[in-house]
Length: 173
Image 1 (cartoon, rainbow, N blue to C red):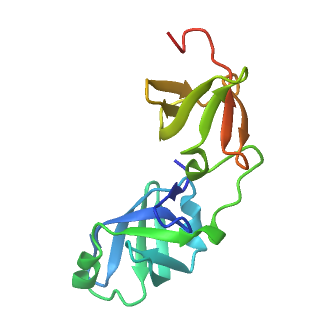
Image 2: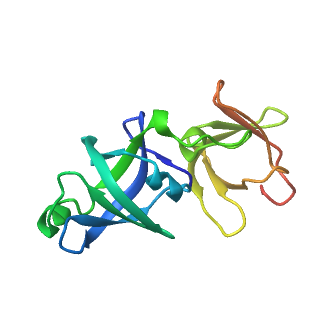
């Protein structure tokens, strides 16, 4: 999942407000980042499509849920008004990934070609499965599902916007 790229490129989605929690303005949020520990050290988030800055007073993470107390959200009614809003961090606050790891927003949109130069299309989306992600590669002619494994993905060059793959037997008809 990583941290999801949103239309305004400089912001990454990290949570979605699903409901108020209690009567003092806390909000219950679905965690939509692979790094929920970030909420323990993130002093500011950006709310909704307008990316309105909101200061984080406190947070509690429990698996895929985070309870947040945000400055200025002081009642259950205030928290209810936030229901459905996505919460973002600025791209400059993204978690540092290990080498050869990428955020989804860096992968989606890459051109995909085989090691021998055949153009396959562009990565349109990424599906999470239990064992590995699957890249959905779309072209005008077809849709191809590629497992995100080292045997298939040979190189990712963000500078040129290209992923080079080796198609294993059975992946293409």
